[in-house]
Structure formats: structure tokens, C-alpha cells
Image 1 (cartoon, one colour):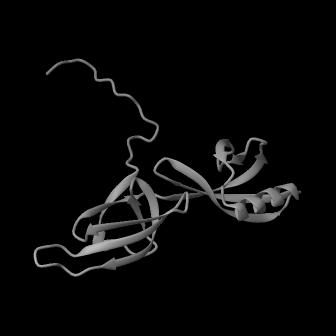
Image 2 (cartoon, rainbow, N blue to C red; image 1 turned 30 degrees about the horizontal axis):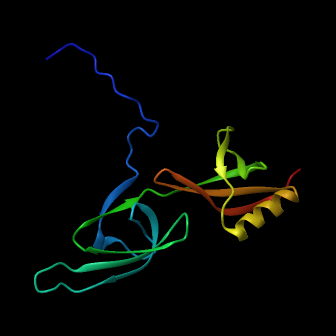
Image 3 (tube, one colour; image 1 turned 90 degrees about the vertical axis):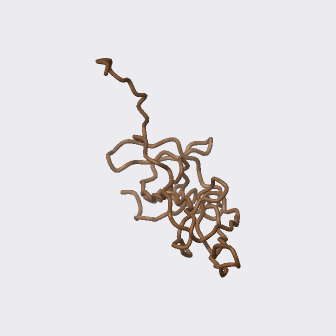
Length: 160
């Protein structure tokens, strides 16, 4: 044994995993799953019967939670699938910059300036119109696997 000190590189996320394993047979509709390294929301699950030699298979149809693309995967029901840690956080909208970034107020009073406006046209119009009218807006930010995106909007009344 040596008396040397060990030095470790510190990571911002404290080494927390972006996903956790869950048995394929336990994943249900409207749950989350990782398909082709993308976090997805399951829209359809069908399970086939076991074959002569094999496993029952789960067929997942899911939609990417960030870009809306439809993805499919077939996994033996006894195997583990990756499930993303999905978080939703509400922030108050402070400002929209000309280059498409938003400035948000966090719960502890700091600002968060690294998020772009959403790509969904309907939500984008609602945010821009509401902000232009001087309303107090709260946006919901969904984050999973190191990605973040504005996914919803709430109007909490006019600015005083």
C-alpha cells in the first residue's frame, strides 16, 4: 500500500448515469426508452409469444422526445433496456434574444441563457406573441441524456 494521494477529475454531474436499466417486459405505453441512443416516449408496445427456442419479444414504437421522429425497436422481453432519466423544470421567461436564445430565471434567482427557442412552430408563436404582449410566461424545460428543450408554456398573467 502506498501513501500517495489519488486525484480524480471532477465531473459536473457527479458521475450520475444518464440512463437506468429496466426489463423490456416492464416498459409500458407512455413510458420512456432509449432507442438508437435517443430518449423516446413509448406510444405502442406489442409482445410476441415465445418461439420454439426463444424469448418473448417486445416491439416498441416510440417518438423521440426532442425531435419528434418515430423510432422502433424489438427486444427480448427478458433483456434489459436503457430508460432515460427525464426531468421537467419550470423557469420564468425573462428575455428572447435576436439570435434565438432565451433568458430564463431559475428558482434560486440565477439566469439560464443556454437554451434555444423551441422548433415547434405553434409553441414558438405562442412564446413570441405572449412575450411581445408583455405577459409573464413560465416555460417548461424537458431534459434527458444531456439535452434540454422547451416543451410547454404557461401564462401566469400580465407583468405588473
